[in-house]
Amino acid sequence: MGTKTDKQGREIVEIRYEMGIPGTFATGPIMGHMLNKLKDKELWGNRCGKCQNVLFPPKIVCPKCFVEPTEWVKLDDYGYVATFDVVHFPTVNPLTGEMRPVPYTTLIVALPNGGGFFHFCLEHDPEKLAPGKKVVPVWREDRKATPSDLEGFVLADDQG
Amino acid sequence: MTKRMRNVAITGIGQTRHRGHREDINMVELVSEAVEEVLADSRIDLKDIDCIVHGNMELFEGVHQPDMWHVLGDGAFGKAGYRITTGGTTGATLACTADHLVASGMYENVLAIGWEKQEEGMTTTGITNMADPLWEREIQTGAITGTHGVMMMNKFGEPANQAAAEIRVLMAENARKNYKAHLRIDITREDVLESRVLAWPLRLLHMCPESNGACAMLFSSEEQAKRLPQKPVWMHDHITVHRQETFDLVNMGDLDTHGEAARVLYARNGIVNPLKQIGVFEMYDPQSWWALDWIGKFLMFENGEQIDMVLNGDFAIDGKFPLNPSGGVVSSNPIGATAIIRVAEAALQIRGNAGDHQVPREVDLALASGFGGTFWTVLLLLGKDKPDK
Image (tube, rainbow over the protein chains, first blue to last red):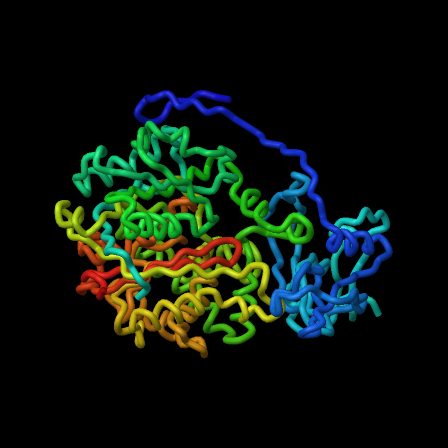
């Protein structure tokens, strides 16, 4: 809270606020199963019986065919860069309220058998990243069935 | 065009001067500045307005149901009211809603008000909260993304980099002619290319600002439009397209909500050559890389033809296809108002009284677009003449 005066001599009074909203999101059984599997360092999607596409994150209906997926599929433990963002602008992690250290990189991982998803990339050099490069996951030691159990992806070449 | 119960005209336009700081007034007073101007512009008596449609992004300022609070600033006392909050497209959806409410015969005069006071909250935090909380929210970067830039660089190389900078320079030139614009800066292509990287290849000067501002527009029936003194601008058509949950992330080309909106809108309004038939386009351009990509989507180009057009100056106010004579979103961005400002500016161009940023030709048809965080397109077509029944 503070008061000041503008160029015309008028009082400027502002009220400072900070909003913290604790909450809990139910995942439902399909997302819940996938999140639970993250604890075992495994990525599981589901397959549409009609178009045969693998959906990750798994979905309650196939977004192309609008039918319920028929089976669970364990994903390969690699993917390819579809596109990426090396972000130098500090932003807040909306789930924790903490500022993210910069730079950080987000990417879309293209899966070998179709589809793809958003996550972090631990390589921040845009010169080294390019669509089509092979990436592999890096897992956290302490896993809690959340998307951040997966710390992110690194270039497969860097893994020897 | 789509089936219409009756014609609807834009009969009044009001806007604040959009600014980075407005700590001299509160939200209610900000809204009232635009409302006072639309009343003066249309010369309607507040008592003749039947309904107020009000919109912004609640998560930005953290005030829920601000329409209740704003009654003394927007004149809604005793009137019907609706609240619209569709993210970045809010302003465009406000215009579509007001159009529907008048076209249906329900109301004669509907006032649509979009506003945002962005300095009072955290924009990027608000935007990231729109992402699905079970997977994507933690990874979201809000509107700060260079992915389309990466794709354009991969496809077209350095000319795309130059054109993204050049379109920003053009927007600054236009904004300097528009006293209501927030950023009225004098910049060169080099300034843009040397500004700091936000998310490669997106740089600070490519990106829209956070602004405080409001825009109010009056939508009236044909009978009312005859009575009111302003030259009416007619609503011809509009379309909304979004597909956040159903598109293939890997194949971003699949996310062509702009192209889909344009294809359908053009087909049902007999537009076969938008470059010739449309006199001006106020396009929602949150950043210059998106602008460069999206011009191509809206104009149905397949091979990046817009890159040469940008470098040739074809999108200047006096060019072949005037784009954002107002200076666009990269110059002014009070988000809940941003998309309705596109509609207002397109209407001003048809009226012919946009002031120093008026295009030097008669505008028969104008396009205005809105874009929102969940890949949501709203595209509106306005005309000088009444649409064919």
